[in-house]
Length: 245
Ligand code: URA
Image (cartoon, rainbow, N blue to C red; front, side):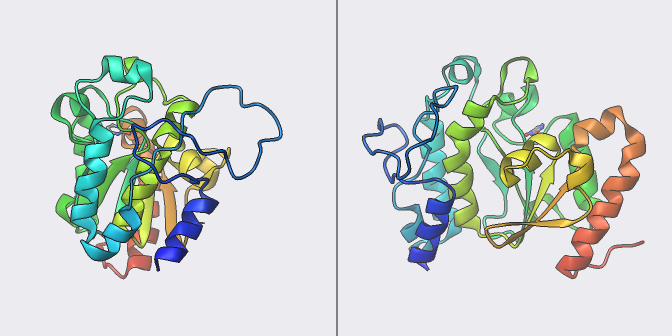
C-alpha cells in the first residue's frame, strides 16, 4: 500500500519527502527539456504522511498536513496578503471531496472553505443531493487567498500541489467533484474548458472525478444551475445515492 502510494506520488511529480519549509536539495528525477518560465519552489510534501495515513488514520494525517500548510511561506504575495491559511473542512473519511480553486475574502477571514455566498450555494447543492456538509470534504487547489480574488497563478498551484495530494492521500475519497475551470484544469492537468470537461467522469489516480460549474459562476449565471443539477445526478447515481428527480 505504501509503495503504491509512493509510486503514485512519483507519477504526480513528487520526488522529495522533506518538510514543507525546508529548501530542496534533491535534484528532480528527470531533467526538464527547457528551463521553466517561472520559479516553482519545491513541491510541497508532508513527511511520512503515507505511513501515518496507514497507521493513525485520515484525521491525524490531516492535522499534521494542516500544520505544514499553516507554516508554508512559498508564495510571497499570498503570504503577505493572507489573514490565515484555509485548509479544508468536513469528514476526513468522506467518499466525496468537493475541490474549489482558492479562498475568497470570507474564507480568509474565517479560515474555512466555501463560507461566503458561493459557499451558501454549495451548501444548497450538497443538501439537494440529500447530503450534509459533514458527510463530504471541501478543499481548494490553493490554501491562501489571492489578491482581489484573482485566479491562482500556475506557480502558486504548483507550490500547493503537494499539500492537495497529501490531503487526498489521507482522505482517499472515491469521488472528487471539481468546482469550476481552475479546479478541473489543475487536478486533471487539462486545458479543456469546463463546458467540455463537465458531464462525464474522468480518472485521477483511481479516483472518479466529475467537473461542474463553480457556484460563484452560478451566482452570475443562474441558468447554468440546470447543468450542475444534471452533473450532480450523474454523480449521485454512480455513488448509489438516490435523490429526488
Ligand atoms: N471559492 C472557492 O473556490 N473556494 C472557496 O473556498 C470559496 C470560494
